[in-house]
Image (cartoon, rainbow over all chains, first blue to last red; front, side):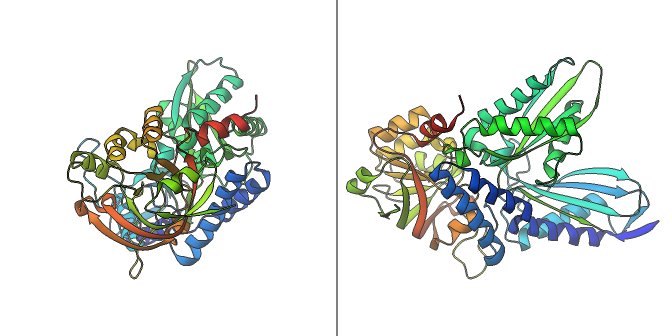
Length: 280
Length: 180
């Protein structure tokens, strides 16, 4: 067994919250620069130029990329040979989020109850998803998920015989309905298979993939490319002002499912796509 | 070409603005989002600020670092404010800054009261913050990031999304670039 102190986890999560919110990743900046070359609308090109400049200012002058610094999503791969000492995992993560949001001057955007809606004042609780994996390490992936794009995701249960095209159309229709609300140009995560809650988690995990990394499954990769082309034919464009770049990337994750089911969830992330990971 | 305008607005400025114009604003603007709008409508007979000719910015910034007027300060979704704007426009509000389209009803009200709607780039909170030179909370301090701030802005970049001729950038833009 390898012993890892809970305070190490807290420190790691604190750092990820801050880094994700201040430093847009290089692959996102690459895709925005590519989008600037492809975009045909002049208003939309101005928006993209502002986004590229915004990322630079955020990192160098230390301002959060976006004022919606998100709900804290924390994905953990916990090695089964790890023993956590000096505290429990959930508390350690939440303490990290609390400190990261306070010390990083990030906006607290979480309310304690869906109806009473009092701000918890430290952006906790985080949403934590833990997988137990072989090994003696902990991998923590943090995602700051903004409210605008989260509000426009969708779920649908298809018949098991549904054609790929029907699913592609559902994804495209979801993006169309979301329109400017999702803060395009967006990243689209699609979870296909599993069951209801599993497809939703798959869609989120699909968003975690590096945006320039290609899907290793050839068929799924083809589907991603087809959906991306259809989405960019919608004309929504950056911030919905009309244009030829509505999505930067489409990511699909699949899983085995019941013979009677074909669940699909679409989760959208805005251009402030803030994902960072660390291995302890 | 980029148009330079000042806030508070005048009829002359408003008339000169067309959908798609890239505009930079200097002067005073006020922030308000969902909770502040709810209260403004209740307090409309005795509002905590004079709305005539002013611009409201739909924004709830991140906390400011020491020595700075404001943190990251981009726009939030405007559509959520549509149900509240009637009384505000009646009281003389002339401009709004946010992100995303407005409802049919909101657009009709803007046309009736000769008000304009600008969009700022959503998610460009760092870039936009650099154009905010000072910030003071002037009403509803208990609302935290949702309280009403008075911002002094310099060359704050926006695009005209709805002008007083009733045109709409979202409708026109999508039509132009949609593949048939």
